[in-house]
Image 1 (cartoon, one colour):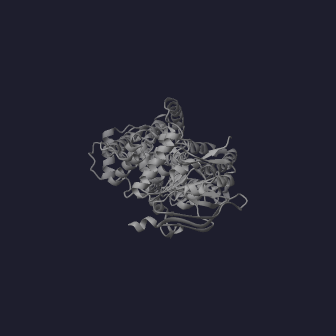
Image 2 (tube, chains in turn red, brown):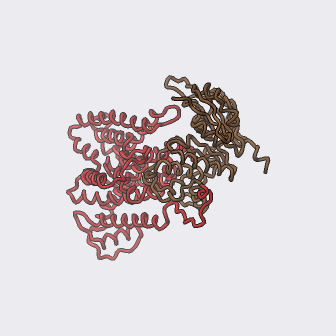
Image 3 (cartoon, chains in turn orange, green):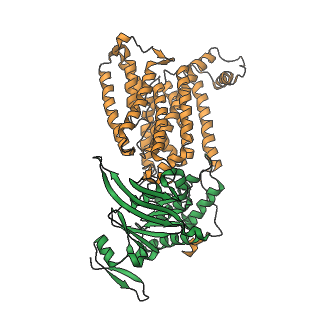
Length: 370
Length: 269
């Protein structure tokens, strides 16, 4: 006991927090991987452009560098009008989903959590499908799929509003005595999602010739990527990602439970609300431009937690980089596989990979041990 | 600075509190609690299950607000304090805490530095020093690089103590710190806490169940019963056979060891 009273003179340094070297490797490596994935995904497609030409065109368009003049004809248009918006959409969507998944898994302290878990997917789906079926539902108003608001399609607007609105509703319903217990939030989200899913099924039943479009949206696809959608999504996603990443400390502390987090200075209910809103904003934005792409938001956080540890200081920015890389490559795969929706590919590959991971590693376990 | 030692650090004044029930009424737990903690006090809080000991601690941190009466800390009503400012002065060793998977002990202890965080991402030299000191004081230096989920019950408790000490609090609230600990670990944990109080002037309020342990540990014992502090004083004054029978409904005999120390002995169960 006496020995414990005085710190031994030979105290070795206690390392706290991720070292700078480790952060640089994880985040710098992730950034290089992402950049490489973007260039490769832009270069490859039904018309091969070549890495050299791709870099030249990207340098010309993004950095104002002069073209060599030796590029293949049409390379500029293929890259800039078709592939780049699609690849950048994949980057935003993948990064956004992985980040939101990381946040929800920590916030709900539930390893099954994904970005959609408290109703975003169901709400956005109902909104999007209502949008796709607007010609049938509201013929008198002559609102069509082609209608736009600030250049956005009615589908995007309704998906965004549906996702955000559903989570706000779920949150409000879960609130009792000024508190939002995590379990209530999960169960309410599940119940509300079920009701909305019934609405989705009902609409699909009466959808007639729109069924294909609806199905494609539900699977999640980047085929409809456009610069105008990016102009809407990028600012929202970058803002919500930045605001989430700086809240890493709150997320770490909330893992300890509400009471201990409060004792460490966190205004728990406010912190949970802010985190939920930001993660939902990111998810709804993503869903609006891509549909409901599965597994990225569930698997990426788990894999990263295994690889680099659970500290959100590193985990949050890493999830953005690696989630973005993963989806850029997955969408390339989907394009090469005959243009199937990328959501089918992420489920096909992601789910078996996840099962393999679960069997291989003891450390995919609850986010917390009580 | 002798005047400081008698100065009141925290006080509950006629505090009443009830938890809201589904039908809208409140289940009354504390009726009218008066308890004053002077700087450097070492107080054991005892009482039956459900008598409101944990509730009292939560009122002292400001996590719960009293229905009536007032909680004061360092001369000001606790309701005037920001959460973060309370966390810089008051640390809690909770009865229950979920340990997140995959964190090393040193990383968890660093979470105790959260209220003092100055930089957005980086930890400071002061943080590293405080973490090392807290680990040493809690006897947990050897655990620093271990994963929290692999700790035994006793090691886990030392981790929690280190987390609380990393907060560098003035007031340390301990909610059944000896739960799940064997006799050796109970004694070494309480001895470490008493030493910190002696060396640093830490003020300690500890919820304890073992009356003999409480008497051996704390120079002052407060008894919570029926929503009030029914006794408050030295163990010899407070822990009479009569009080134990009234509060706990259990018959005990007062015994003396050969060297004259008082002991409460259970009649046969």
